[in-house]
Image (tube, rainbow over all chains, first blue to last red; front, side, top):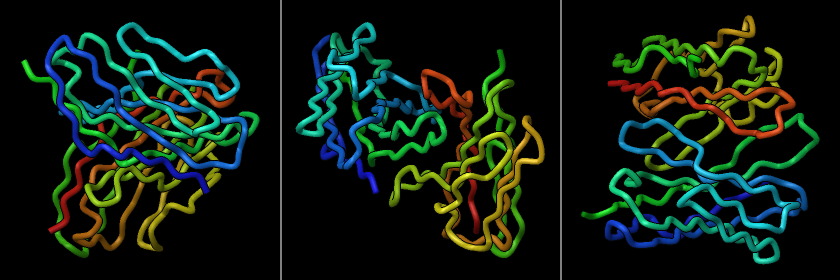
Length: 117
Length: 115
């Protein structure tokens, strides 16, 4: 079974600064997807960024980027120019690529990020 | 375009009562997921459906929990009888079967409190 570990229960950052959230995972599969989801106080789960394991290039979405280290099974999220609206719980998640028949997501326990003014 | 719709948003019930949570996935999405979120256990997948057929229910905690998807636009998660340890936020999510993005679109969740 796959496991996802987020070792930082809480983090804080000053507005406009950069912060990196850590995630490691354990799997014997070679083909899979990794995600970061954001859950603000509204409780809504929002996809932040996605990475396909077969792609060597790190995914980027505006101020959000990842550092995907497949051999180390590491998938960290970097948030640049942090904004107050980035305050949220961030979840790392894993999905096997089983040919389009299994979309089961395994989530980490989450990191609570607070952006301070 | 409407997102995933869940009802009710909040539910307070007494131990032993039956609880039914409802979900309407995004139109055209063929896969539907039920998750439970608690402080202790985080986000756990309970069950998911592809084309209205249950594929994996290994996360369903016990026989008190049941889920159905009678058609492509509606699913229920039922707890009977409910217990205080069932208190949690229950999320429904959907995704297009065979979609290339694999993004799951989550509903707003139902906060269940069992007293």
